[in-house]
Length: 363
Image 1 (cartoon, rainbow, N blue to C red):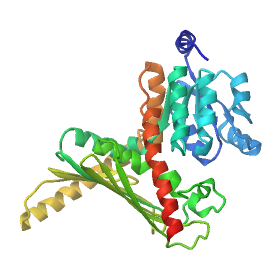
Image 2 (cartoon, rainbow, N blue to C red):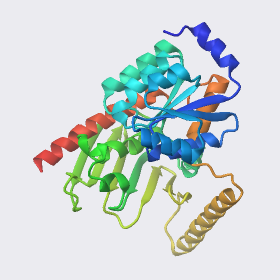
Image 3 (spheres, helix red, strand yellow):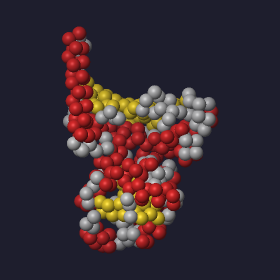
């Protein structure tokens, strides 16, 4: 076990954050890009059981070295953060190994697939006194940040409900791959992606999710998928939330609607736009002015996005989440998403996956 004094001295010595990426699948590419945007961080090594994949990663990204096991990496490298990009069923043992060695950990979502494993991470973090965070990247997408600010300012009044639509085409990489690990879990493809609507609803509804109802259906032709359409209703205190997920859509899209007593917010997360619909009286004149207002907001959002990309200021949700996690280490602050929050999301996720399994067997 690492003592607090050792950890404190270790952190005071840090000048550049040395990062180890564990798991070299396509998810790791986004993490590597995000870490490279942080001037005082360097990726020291990667780790993957698949040696060929690890070699390809270090060659592609010009990373010094690779390892086939985390214990070997920990023994030979001085790293400050282990960034876990492996499938979620492996997250708990990897995170615990790193934390017990006195290393901060950042964990891709979902934090785990079971509350039992998530609790192991939470308990180890408390005992080891290191930083441990979870990637809930949609919370840090630019339109979500703007919407959160608008809600805090009271622009839509008291929150009534929230709805999230997640649309993917049949070519979605995990769904289209019959051998992907997600299909071995009770929730199938949904087991990996449901964390997103869960944490967004927890964020905006400002309450514990106390009840969930799930309905699934199958419309697509992939025989390895028991269901590819999902609708879920959530209750958080007196507030309600819904999510619709499709793997049969004509295009990829993510929409978020926030409904309050004084207004409505509509977000297109992929295109980075946000529209505020304030309270109004219905009249022919108001329809015209309202349409002009909405067009103006879309034009403004689009112009801001173009400028951010053109001048290199645009940060994705992954970029921002990782940047804030690095700052939490530097400033000895709480991570942007704590493992305690990760645990609460996993509790709901595990329950929903069980419902999906039950509904597909009874269909």
